Length: 125
Image (cartoon, rainbow, N blue to C red):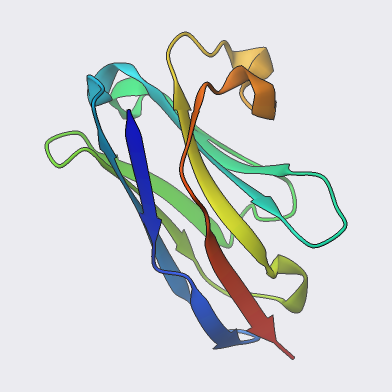
């Protein structure tokens, strides 16, 4: 299984970025896809997730109303659209996937078995 995240970069506060994660080696439509982030000196934290087949989306309170997660099962891709970015959104963003992630565990990193390499997002003030 391989997950390849892309789209990170440097943006000013208030700007937007679009992260993509391409998956291979999995039956993509049957896997829950998650986005997590980790800033220096902090633990990895949940950002957003989308259930298999796009059946439900979930967001951390800190990004609700600003970030949108979506998936294209035909292209084996999940996208995180990030708007109204803030300096506190600065982090390395990781996509992750696993099967059978239940609702109550969707924001727990160790419930995801496969991880991408991460892409750096830097938001300047």
